[in-house]
Image 1 (cartoon, one colour):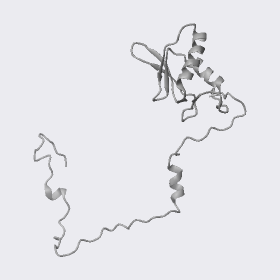
Image 2 (image 1 turned 180 degrees about the vertical axis):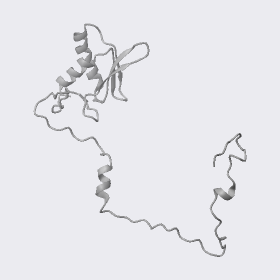
Image 3 (image 1 turned 90 degrees about the vertical axis):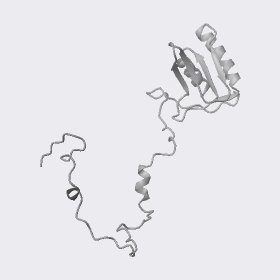
Image 4 (image 1 turned 120 degrees about the vertical axis):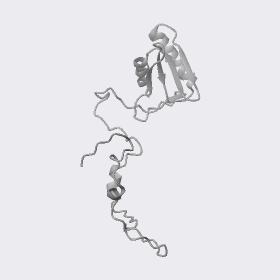
Length: 170
């Protein structure tokens, strides 16, 4: 049956109610209690939870595997044993990488950010300033945030900063 609809509420577009609904059932008795649905109750089974555990994401990032040589082909190397002589510590990111990030701000402003600094951040800033002054040949622009444990540097100096941190053992 082809219907041509010429308006939103045209009688040709709306099927009659008798055709759209099924046959009317017997009227419900208000005195009768409602019947329970034909569904089974809740079944708790711990035996099949093994199959569910496979689908759940891990709660934390696993430790990296041990490689025969470092740095790996991707350039990653593990941190060395913690150096007790330094008053600061740079923790790795949750993916076990050195936390050095390049940013490109408004007006082509390039910055490098070092995160996860713990301990005396001002001692780290002084050592890093001396290293970059010698490496770049100019005074580096730096901003220290003690609350968040971050150090922001002007320019993209991520390669130098990463190499310096790896040489320090972080």
